[in-house]
Structures are given as structure tokens and as C-alpha cells.
Amino acid sequence: MKNYVNLIIPDFQPLALSIFVDAFKIPQGIMVPLSDWLKLKPALNPESPLYKLMAALTFVPFHELPLKEKSVLLEDKLQEVEQANLKKGSYRVYKNELCTSPELYINEYIDHKELVSMDAKTGKIILVKKLH
Image (tube, rainbow, N blue to C red; front, side, top):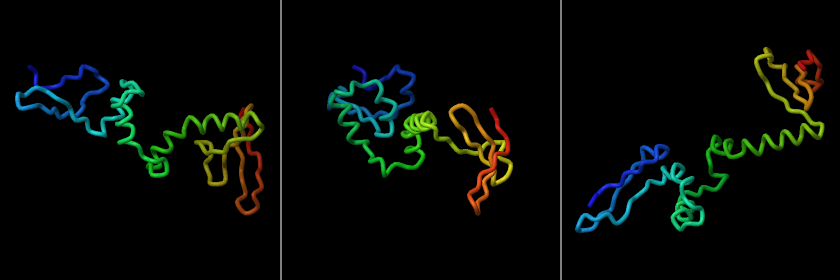
């Protein structure tokens, strides 16, 4: 009898697995590092006991996540909110390659963008160029 596990699923390679065998070298179980959970998660039934156990073991409260992970989790939601705000008449402010000095920003509205200059002392915004 084989005393190893061979996962033929390219997305899961390489996984670091340890195999537990009994006195007769018959496999009885495997150990999966928690760090490999994200690779395995999509292949498991969310209602299975293994899925629920792994989800509980790897759960990290949102406020304890690193900023990079929070950003990934919130990215889709932030885009939805930005689009909803644009539709309601609000605008989005950001910088790009056109913003060649600290006071230049892009104001993006639902139907056009503007290059604007903002006076930091007064808060006054001056239209520099309508972009489209």
C-alpha cells in the first residue's frame, strides 16, 4: 500500500503535506499546514466538517488583518460605493501622471474628468483643464 499522498491538482502544488501512518504503515491521515488553506478552500464543500474546521482555525478578525489584506477584501466593495457615489453626483479625487505638482489633482465625475488645482490654504479649486 502507498505511504504517500499525490495531489494531481496543479493549482494546489506544491503543498507541504505530512502523512500519518499506523504501525503497519497504512495511511491514516494527513496534516495540511494552515498556510495552504487558501489553496485548498475552493475545492472543498463549505458545508463539510473539514471546511468548517479549517475556516475556524484560520479565521482572523478583520481589524487584525494587515492593511494589504484589508485592501484586497474591500476593493470590490469600494468600487461599488465609488460608482454609486458617481451616479448620485459626487466625484472621485486622485492623482495620475498629469498631476505634475503637489496642488494638481484629477476630479472624476460620472461623465467627465477634470485636471484641477487646489489651494491648500484656502481650499479653492481652479479648473486647469477638462479632460473628457
